[in-house]
Image (cartoon, rainbow, N blue to C red):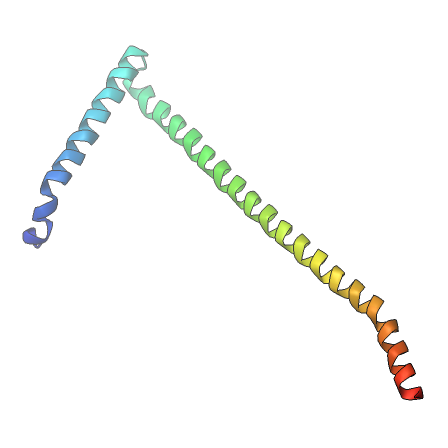
Length: 106
């Protein structure tokens, strides 16, 4: 392992490790305050993790739905634009044909 490469980050790693330890201690204290037994703590934390993970999944699904709605809006605008072009073409075709007929009859 190249210790010189990680030397600039040693203090940050130490701070992160200390922060992790502090958070773990606070969680343990909270669980003790809630009078959750040690064997139930793991299950309790797993339930919290599952709920958070499920919420994350919901957020991902909601983001996907929002993206789909955005694509639908873009497609609707493109369809309107194409419809406008088709309408103008259909409207102008008889006029063009009429003008060509007039020009050819001269």
